[in-house]
Image (cartoon, rainbow, N blue to C red; front, side, top):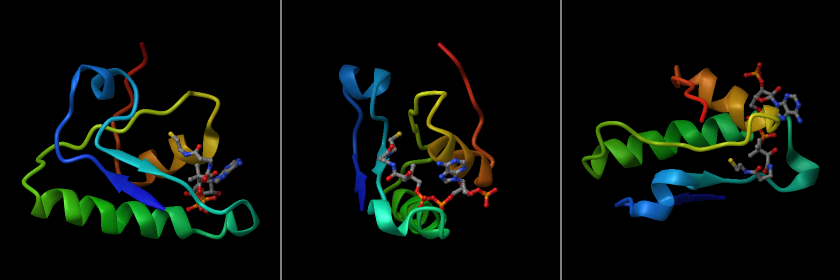
Length: 77
Ligand SMILES: CC(C)(COP(=O)(O)OP(=O)(O)OC[C@H]1O[C@@H](n2cnc3c(N)ncnc32)[C@H](O)[C@@H]1OP(=O)(O)O)[C@@H](O)C(=O)NCCC(=O)NCCS
């Protein structure tokens, strides 16, 4: 599953960002989220989103690794 938010509001700037994703528990760690984000970033580009914001808790290793797989720049707050 992937959700793409075309525009950010104040809440999404803090939690949520442009993209939310999830993989069915039984299918995790098979590379599906990497495919998901790859396709999602193409969609964002086509929507005119030049820089996509993704947010993740730092203990969500699968999400953080997916972001880093696409050269995401981590910022902590
Ligand atoms: C986060 C989530 C989407 C990852 O989905 P996934 O399909 O398992 O991800 P992938 O298989 O594409 O893995 C991407 C990378 O993360 C790693 N990874 C995934 N889950 C991991 C885990 N629990 N522990 C360690 N590494 C993990 C994979 O090994 C892979 O690493 P690599 O780039 O070195 O090969 C999935 O765990 C999920 O749906 N979580 C619940 C919802 C959620 O947290 N959404 C994100 C909110 S920010």
